Length: 304
Image (cartoon, rainbow, N blue to C red; front, top):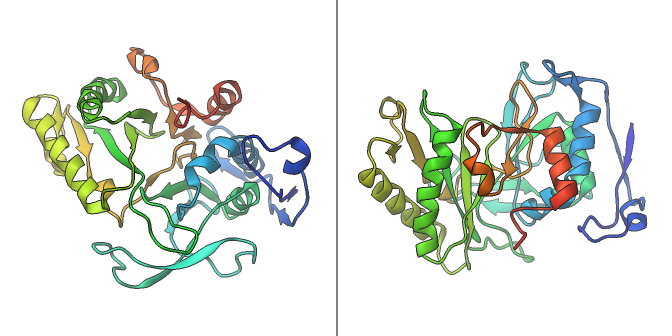
């Protein structure tokens, strides 16, 4: 199976431009089953990522991508890959960056890849990548790390609490964020909970953003200790929603909106509307559902 690499992948690029051949990505073993419970193959993963590309690439733009690879599909070996692997194509953009303080590779130079176009997505999928994780900061045209342009709050339910409980807490979080002039957008994570994202103007450092979200999380936990917790101890999460503020640290990454998840079923980190969060049967969305939504309404995270 061969997928052409287009010249441009912007949401408004004409079809003839999107189909132009600049290079080729050859997909090996397209018949390989990546999700055994549903039969979704590597070819299907490629189709998902090419179909959702206009929305996904907007979220990946200028952010280095940490990948979670499942070479033989879900249920087999999996591993995080941060650096650009040996044998990466010469057209793949990558940069040497100094690892952020506070991470396991603090101070070292890491060679980080960027997925700029459909060809990059297909290249990753061909390596068995299902999950795409990104930081809250971006890299400038000269290679410098910019201040964060978004914040994220990860809402993680402790059983028996579930996604509906996360949605209720998300509304309370959103009230506080809006009071501070921010516009939070919900994303069901494709796993157990959801994230709230909000755009920033780039004036605050990553550690300042982290402190702001930490303070907000602890204030909400103090106000509603029966339903909300802001510390990472798992023994305190029973039937509560954990507000994880830590993913704003410059060394951390979060599942990228529109990315697949490496779960039994091909669920997706899916941007949602606030009205959807009122659904008493709220659930995670699958790849086919997200493809249909992107076709119908575009990118919910950037739409105004």
